[in-house]
Image 1: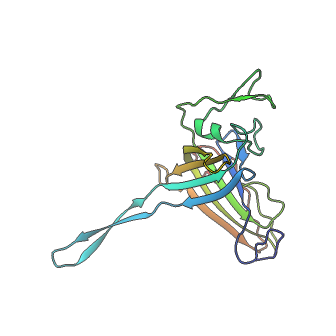
Image 2: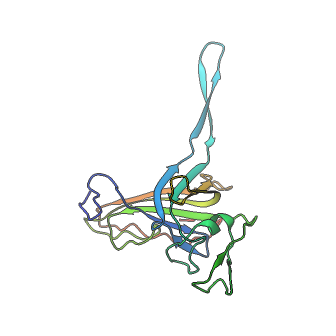
Image 3: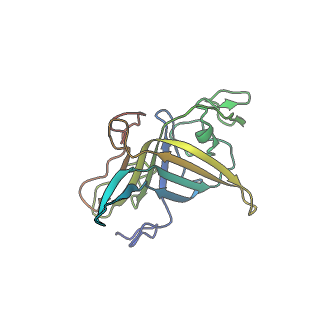
Amino acid sequence: MAVTNYGDYDAWQRHALITIDDGTYHVDMHALTETIEIDIGERDLDVINLLNLGQIPKHGNIGLTTVTFEGYAKEAGTSDASGSAATGVFDIFAYKPTRYLTGGTDTDLGEAQEIPITNHVARYRVAILWTNDGAATAGDSAVTSGTTYFGKRFVIADCFCVGYKESFTDGVLKYTLTFKGTAFDASGNARIEMQSVDATATALSALGNYTPGAADPF
C-alpha cells in the first residue's frame, strides 16, 4: 500500500468516509463518527444426525447484516442540504424527510430543529470507503486510477435504521446509530457489495444514484 498522509502503510488506519442515502437526500457522517462496526450475517448451518452416526450439513440462509456507528453530534438532525456533512443523526432514525424547523421550512438553514418520531420506515444505502485518494470526499466517491491509489468500499442497500441510543455516562454526549439489512431482495438480487481497487490503471467508480428497491442499487 502506498505511503500517505493518513498513515495507511500496510492497513487502513484512522480515517474513513461514510455516506447515508435515502434516494433523495444523502449526507456524509464521517465528521461525526468515531467507530464503525460491520457484522455481516452468518451463513446459517445446522446438522442432521443419521443413525449410522454420519452427519448431513443442513444449509440455511444468510442472516441479517448489522452496521453500527458511534459518534458525537451537537445537533438533533442532519443538515437540510443533500450532499452535505451531517450535523446530527436523529432524523435518520425518526425518519422525517421534511423536518420541522421553528419559523422556517425544510430548506431554511440556521433554524431550530424539531424532529418528531414517526412510524415511517425508510430504506437507506450505507456506503463506507477507505482510500488514500485525497480527491474522494464521501463514502460513494470514486477512487482515481493510478499506481498510488488504493480503496476499499463496503455497501449495504435497502437497509433500515433500527436503533438510536445516546449516552452521557462519561460526561461526553455520544450516539450509537444501528442499521440492519438483508443480503438479498425478494428477487435474489444482492443488497451487499464489497469493492476495492489496488494501484491499477482502472478507477473504482463512484456509486450511482440510489433508488430504493432497484435491482442494482450500487
